[in-house]
Image 1 (cartoon, rainbow, N blue to C red):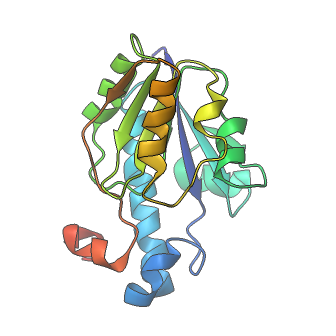
Image 2: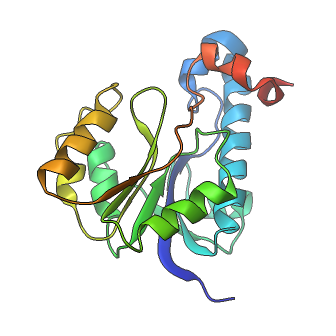
Length: 196
């Protein structure tokens, strides 16, 4: 089956205890946090696979062979560069169109991916807003580096600053459904199946 021309890029790390989902560790321990990260990554990849995009894993925390053994050999695996999220996003920006995802969104469904792909056919940018003021997905039709440079990552200003920059450039943007990420112990109550 031929891939859709849009790439779907997932940033993730290896599910080692003590290094994955560390903000959950006080509530469920290092092994529990790593197990949740493993579940969420596998669910996200299954959802991305269903989209017929070329799925690209930008990985850290282990080597390529460990990720291939974990997630399967049918995906593209590229190591994340050193640096912050800006550096990682810019390294993966081309070729466009491209959709970026994290692995922290339990409610991400096939139709969210399809809506994002469709939106990029007639919009410059597509954004899946997260309840915490960030986003769980951003897609771009070209190398819009200014959307990722000098961004206040890990704050509730990411979404509003992104939309401000889009508007400032006179670009078109499609907003998807707002979803929640699973980042903190308080979030766990929303998805009891994650700790069942």
